[in-house]
Image (tube, rainbow, N blue to C red; front, side, top):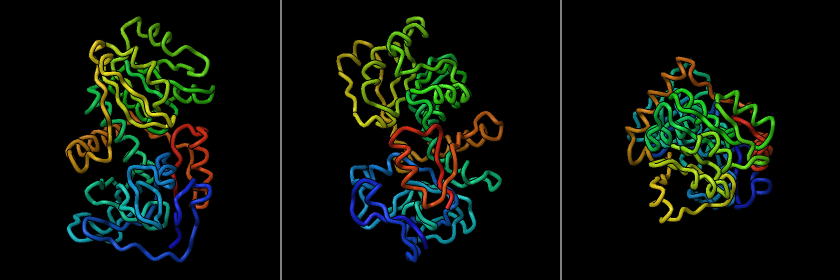
Length: 327
């Protein structure tokens, strides 16, 4: 088996090594072995390699926090069937940047075989994160003002499409002409150039002083301090991630006076604490996909050897949509 290994923690450019002849992982209790057919390339894998992600597997390990493929073997207590087309969170240290990987069965979802695997992997984490955030946590309603920070990213573009499908008025932020055009293509009603426009002034102008009902933020950083001041009465600020690298703070007195909520969306933990939320989102996403209301924004597919370059492009914010590994 071929796959990427991290033997010493560090930046992916130096920590990753592509090795051949690796042993096939053996599924333990609650795990399934899949022949990898697709997997998203995630910013979080950069942090995983460095040892600063919340999951810290023992060395050596294969990154790739989620994967999709065909089930080849199952461990004790697993109800997945051999041959199922499934996606799931990786059972580290046997992550998805390899030809074979382990997934945690309690996180796995089974997909119809007619959906291509690159679409499966995006419908799994990317669209699941956006759906759970917007609908379960954010209570998004038709007519709401939805702000999507980092709208050209994978989860941001998913939030744009799902917001549009829900009848929300979608504002997105982006930082280049290409990304602005991409956000409009995804369905954003208005796109703010965060590099050249005053974000606070534009939000007040666009919403006619009403403010943002739901803010979807996978970026963090300085933008959060601006957006919190433009939240509407009983608005919902969804904390998705920190691609900017800076973790924002929300003063409790400001939350009280403005009467908005700050809600963390740790999607991967719902399978442990509230699996019914994942199941409901999966059912609705399959419906929206079948109806053509959503189409995952695939930037391009890449082979195993291209993983370091793909992670570098993500780190440099040169990617609109998602990069998908197809070993």
